[in-house]
Image (cartoon, rainbow, N blue to C red):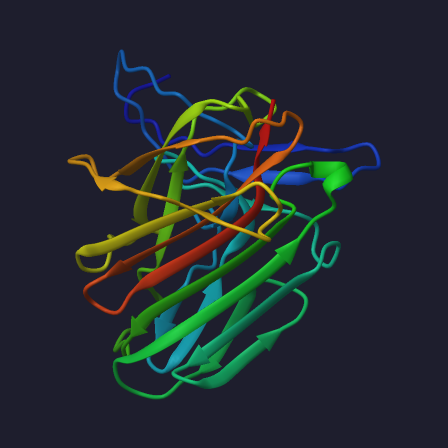
Length: 269
């Protein structure tokens, strides 16, 4: 690849009558002689956002826009956004200012040009999405909640704001499966969706795993590393052919948090 050349990539799978699932990267440059691993459509699939999409989580004066892509692979270098055709799968977004519901979208993952109160105030966005397991197998259902702060923006343009998100790192095969009845090492990294930086200092990261689609959960103890990842180990269930679900959260000292529940995040082989 040409050094300093900006690359924006996208891939789509599931054509010829199946639901097409598209994945779009952020804008990247690669140094001469470097090697970069790019994992497309890899678990754990959860909501994400990249600058390749023209609409961001952003604020102009006292108007707010929210836009995430529900089916994005976790990636520490591509800032992926992934999506299915509009209206084809159950999707429900709600946005609150404090305890007040300010937007309810039963069909998609966005909120456009909604007037909000002036000043720096707390907000919460809640997204529930589903997709058919017979088509996609993994990440059949996710529930995500974000809390964030947003202030009046004195600008001529919509300015992106930071929202906390989680990247996952668990080695799997090309089917998204990990070995059953084995000790697995998982790493979580709190990141900012889109163009911003992590808002504040991360104080807490938690993780639970489930082998019965979220009916029961087991705690995984995590330790903070120097590279921003929080790592832990756990023993997978003995039965092959099942699934591993995850429930994770992260918080900062500045009023930002994220909670992910990903049902069937990985398979067990």
